[in-house]
Length: 114
Length: 116
Image 1 (tube, one colour):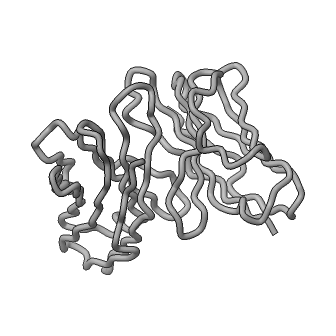
Image 2 (cartoon, chains in turn red, green; image 1 turned 30 degrees about the horizontal axis):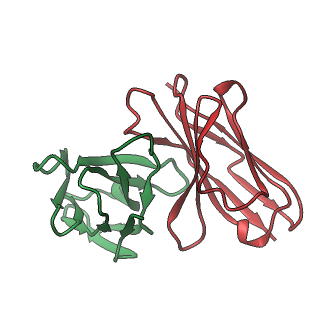
């Protein structure tokens, strides 16, 4: 069974540009989460989808971040326009509706904003 | 709000020895879950072990075990017979048990080096 996959693994962009990160959860997992780790700090929750609906988006930093999960399968996280402080590693995780206690993580996307 | 503290940014251990990673947390809830995740370099973060707060017995998974002290709000991870493949960043995490709040709260992580 394929795990959670994230694309790209690394992205380098300039301040003011737009970047879109993608996450493919494990097949059959209705729960999908986005987290972010800024250098030297904790991994912080961004938002939680149940299927295509946003269950909790309390961690989204501001309106430059837009997450979507059309059709309840893969998800995208768009940053527009990117700022220097957006640099970090963005993790995606998914969990099964009957085993929501176990979140499976992807390897992350390292975003560098120059 | 809950917080998780990992006071050891880095730790090292000799192969085949035992190492303990510390984690403390702060919460006003009585029921919750605690986790240890491991992230090898450039690879996926994987769940090592989990503990439900209502269970008094410490969780064990092969060479990995926890010392869960609920009153002290402490959740340390012990790795026995350390192997080179155990080298990774280790994250302690907390999750509320109530409602539909599934988000994990993480500590800053401990980088474990295993010396041959």
